[in-house]
Amino acid sequence: MAQDTIFGKIASGEIPVEILAETERVVAFPDIAPQAPVHILVIPKTSQYENVAELAAADPELLAEMIAVAKRLADERANGEFRIIFNNGASAGQTVFHVHAHVLAGEFEERSLI
Ligand code: 5GP
Image 1: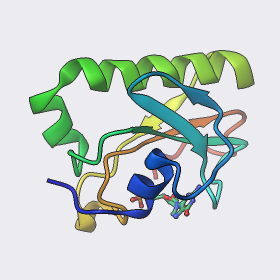
Image 2: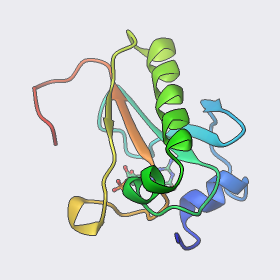
Image 3: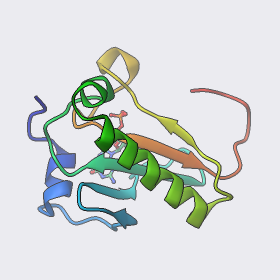
């Protein structure tokens, strides 16, 4: 179970952000430190899941909804193609323990997975 995090406060509206896409269960906003021309975070509004492994096991439809929102954003803001990253655990680089998809699109400078 995820604890209260900055993304929980964003999801509840306690901390305002520029909302780029929203569904009943998902919200998307720009990453504060972008790593690509398009770098958007897609999160579930619920703070129930810390990481994508927990989410996929418990609610695959919610995970699919996050990916559908990512595709919509890439259609709107790039050429429909995108990279999606879920850091899963601290040693894998996760710093916020409210599951989130990094959606990266635009021109990448080099072929790198990190
Ligand atoms: P992680 O390392 O957990 O996979 O990714 C966390 C991401 O959240 C980082 O890319 C970081 O730049 C972003 N981030 C951290 N705090 C905030 C914030 O307050 N607002 C926004 N928009 N992004 C944040």
